[in-house]
Length: 342
Ligand code: GN1
Ligand code: MG
Image 1 (tube, rainbow, N blue to C red):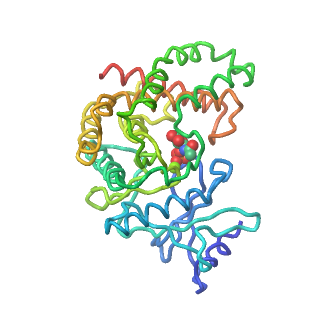
Image 2 (tube, helix red, strand yellow; image 1 turned 135 degrees about the vertical axis):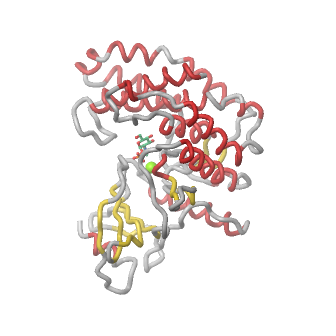
């Protein structure tokens, strides 16, 4: 793939940009585009297996930017750059989709959350993001991945994998599968939530990992990035994924379970940062589910990793055979450790 050809769809001048791989996401291919060692833009090739409707992402970004503009408020994320022909995406020769976003000067992303201050700042940014769009009718947003954080759907996919998945993987993982099935009570609570008037559909980011926040040199949060999965959803997705990904010193790839656990001060920091922006927005019923948010996301992610393992690793990138299995084990361990803190 000649990325220079892609850049020419954005720039009339023929600057010889340096293009370097960037970040550690499991889904897209990301590149820093710059001059003399300084990044000016971020170029991403959209994974269209995962995002089969890239235009839905562009539609949502447009809705958000229009809303922010009308309310004279900060969009809370960097707006993507259109091509010279005013398209949201540049296209590769085989129809691939690319998007370009400005690189925010003096900002950086981090891949692991290493202090409760970082956790606080990130939670504050994601809270600010959702709160900023509180008056946007989230029904105007499209679903960029159908059923993305629908726990019932993820549970059904898991159950289908138990029937049609790779046989020896199912047999060898009996114990873990049983442990995961025992958590079905978390699904019951979710089903209750989605029927309750006290739970609002909100503009939800749905991927609140620490690398989706930009920080400045003094480690203050600047804004959030990655609007791919921003759509209508429940706050438990955003808060829960922060718990899932910031609380533990070891991340979801960690196979030494001693490293997987909950740092209590990070939990307090996340709640503080998020509540500063969101507590006025949340209903009483939602506030009762602050801690459930973590259980919801940890279990759902365990189900998703395990489903992928049983189906033969078709969704998540893996670097070794049991990678998805180990991720599922890791997430179930985290869930158990998390509960001990409640
Ligand atoms: C995927 O690629 P990345 O890290 O942004 C996934 C998230 C999962 C995460 C687990 C579109 O996100 O939902 O939580 O992996 N995104 C999609 O590492 O499936
Ligand atoms: Mg993402």
